Image 1 (cartoon, one colour):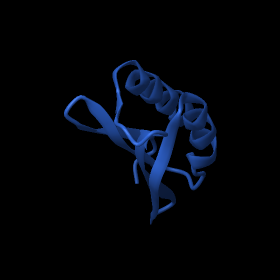
Image 2 (image 1 turned 180 degrees about the horizontal axis):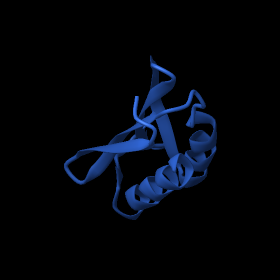
Image 3 (image 1 turned 120 degrees about the horizontal axis):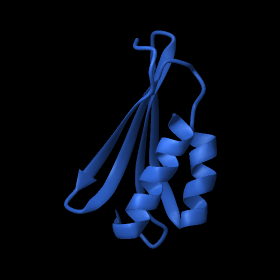
Image 4 (image 1 turned 135 degrees about the vertical axis):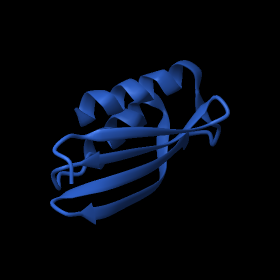
Length: 87
């Protein structure tokens, strides 16, 4: 496993649908990100974590609390929150 955190944003059309975070430590980000996302009106509709050596890969599937897609300014805020907490 690499010694750096890698973040991959999964997009469909113009909307952010999921975030994948690979990190070299076993310290899940879901608790921090869940609070931030709730404050933005974003729901984590699915969460998966996979052990990888000494680290983990987390996958968070996102949508707005009303069920619509995370796009525009909200998508940018979500990306910024992930990057701030993951790095």
